[in-house]
Length: 133
Figure (tube, helix red, strand yellow):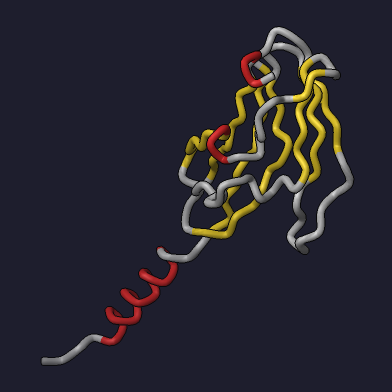
């Protein structure tokens, strides 16, 4: 039985190119579903394991904002936050009407919901309600 090496090489190259990892994106979004303005102060973890300076944003009622877009090299988008707290946010503090701090630790992953947008794009969403303050 004669083996055709061009077919074998084609099959090996097909498997190699099909299984290659690609760049995927994960958005960290905050939605203000409260009755007032929300102040969010945070810094984000950089690839060098250092963090950025504090950033502060204000969200009006029913406003949504992406605070981080993270690039993940993998075969598809997935939830990168497997621990108990959001690792990409070393500091994360939320205030309602600039004075009332949240009574919950909103860095905990149980408050963030992961959604797959497409094969190569996902999002983690924190929806803020009045009951969190």
